[in-house]
Length: 478
Figure 1 (cartoon, one colour):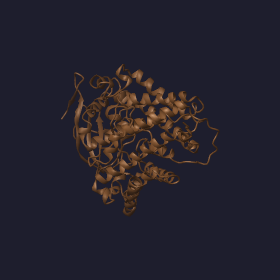
Figure 2: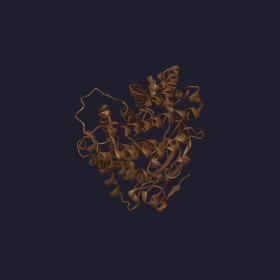
Figure 3: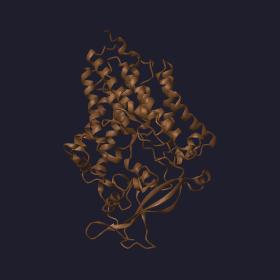
Figure 4: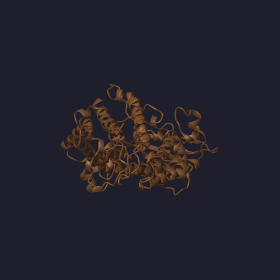
């Protein structure tokens, strides 16, 4: 049996760009884990891993941390992921034997799998599952000096199809504003973490917002089918998706979701005009593994595919414990009003009407109205994202927001590192409270007069005024 059909040199450059992009995203993901895990899921974090592993068995959340957990071990895993990702990004495994390259890509997948499966609510977003699903397929792509396996490239197209088509369907089945093309009247202002250009996107003319929404529907509901068409139609579809994803990169902060989508789309583009070296033929055993992988993905795709056509479609869900084939989607509904939680504290032990309250400033989420929204993506600020959900409803934060208040009252150094500014410079405040504000972008006139990016109005309180009691417990003052 000949295997000439199983590999296509025409995708050599696309495969190389895909691998470099994926390695860079892995590096960012591991770096975010290394720098943020301790106050979030560490031994003394808001949602400690040891507490989780005592409650949830290995079969439900496979992770090496079920056998042993310590903050030092987690840090070792995360920084090891950074190192292997950097090696892959630099191409250090481009010319190794196929089995060595496969092992090199297997390591970050296993390490990140272990992190995500114990990450709880902090790792509950679709881009985590997407990275694991795509990372698993990358194991089988082979080194740079071999011809890319065709079946793996088609499996990447299947991921891209589900990613885009699922997002399009959830919109059409969700908020009515997607059907009348008015969702983007609000989205740029109310999205979880606006970026530096979001204010300008929000103030685009309303007819252009409708064009944005219509273009989104076309790209997500029509274009994905062209991924399975002959070339050059498939490449044209991928390039159109890349263009729309770049629009999203410019308009907000969505972790590495958009960059990873672009990376997957690059794998569809054939015959990129670069010199192609002489390529080796992959060994027969590798072809056999790729066939086995294809059968596995086809079998596991049944439930995600059924979900796509279901009236009760769910988004960002894994149907297997290893996140091998998942469902995706975003913003099936769009919030029309933005609320933010502002955490304040004072060194006054008996707060009154004249008490001066000082705000904690987060790195990414809106706070100071005069601060321009920053650009952080593809880096992911996990606490900032969850603060957006907490402002929608405190039920999203009941497991960790009181703990965050306690950490700030005790001036926990690791927690303070998650913030942009601590108004007490590492010292303990006497009392703390959390208030809810209604935020909106300033109008161009207001911006010109005040220099502010936001206008905010108080809407009530989220946490009462609290302090550390005589026995070390958090107690309410009012």
